[in-house]
Length: 142
Length: 381
Ligand SMILES: Nc1ncnc2c1ncn2[C@@H]1O[C@H](COP(=O)(O)OP(=O)(O)OP(=O)(O)O)[C@@H](O)[C@H]1O
Ligand SMILES: [Mg+2]
Image (tube, rainbow over all chains, first blue to last red; front, side, top):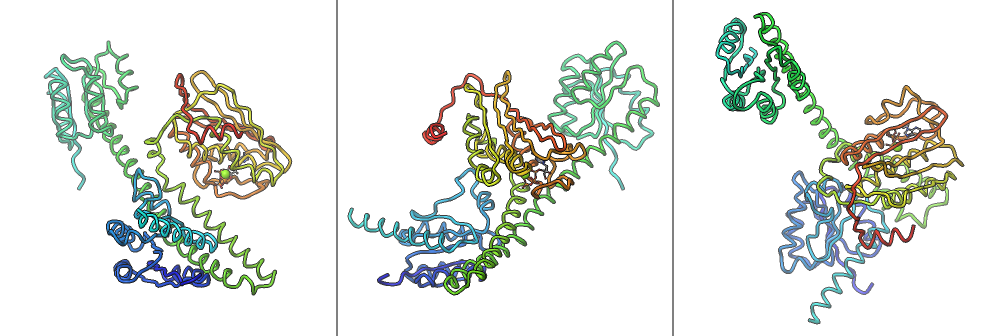
């Protein structure tokens, strides 16, 4: 890897952040972690990240979803690919009645369930980053 | 202090209304009267009585219509019909339509008092049952929330740590250590799967699947179900044979949950059969129904267990049990089948094997439109 890819993880449960970060760092990524949605959103705005790992069910009221929506509405931030990580698929379904279980917040995103197997995690992360890069190159061409 | 019970009497004969009022005035009731059906229905809506007496023969809208309207306003209201001796037949008909009892004219004061008391008892019972059912539902929802938050997420965190540890240690562990590591992960994985099954049984809103009902092909449902159970069957050297009638009718339903229902039953057939046996799946049209049967030569179900196997968390007490389950599969299956307007029945004898039959209303005269994916699937099988 030429330059280290920079990832941001936003999750309020340190017991997920630590092991997931360990897997990612082991694979050569640089990872920042924020433990609440507000700080996470600030960090995303000020830093330049190649990918965001986001727990959408943080807190009582699924605050993660609120920031996912905020990111989706932001012209610049929405270009960052998001790997949505969730504790419970079935709860996600309640939040989006009548919609496919995987809601699309930004052009490049995907949903996986906790716990995440290392191989799957690494594969999703690299695919999403690649897809976002291709998208960017494509839009620069046009 | 308990609230006074409310009674409404609908009858076109003033004399009847008056005598009822007089007879019941001794009891602790709040009573209203209406001289015709329209006024009666109106009062039923505003006054919300516990018990309503309805004269079946009235000019204007009939007693039967009044009964129907009351049902719509509040099905928990207890209705009692008043009839002349000549019209006992219609009283029976009214009771078939939900009336609680009938009072033949002429009646004595004691008869009226007695039937009123019984009506009120009945109303209390109905309300209590309803409250109990609501409580049970709340408990169900709470239980699901507790299971998911208090059990599932800590377990998931443990598993996540194990994943990262094994990832970091992958080249440092001896083969034995690696094996132990894998066992921990497998057992935790099983536990999470179990919680997941429970959660699904408890939280799944079967009614909501009706919103997405579409014409569904039985052969597709069966092949998908078999495909999902096959790995387990092959490991146990159990052959699953299917015989599906060529021109079998489609059904109106949700393919995903129908496959889940069939998977549960075929999965059980494999699970509760000895290695080397076989499972037979047939699907046929029966008049305006479609029947799917799943037959196994397994351990069978004792007549003590048979009535209960469709209940939540029920597993049979038999010591012959080959594999242990969580007792959720069939309960969920039954709910799915009933949401499709179908039903499931079983015949079984201990040691002789079991036959499950699913019946669904067929979708007749409606050619099924197969999506490209389905087409591919059909060709493959
Ligand atoms: N084909 C069968 N042969 C013998 N016993 C059966 C069969 N199908 C079901 N049973 C009995 O009925 C019980 C309830 O079945 P059900 O599928 O609901 O639960 P389970 O198989 O124990 O667990 P799971 O929730 O994993 O399916 C089983 O525990 C088993 O004792
Ligand atoms: Mg089962």
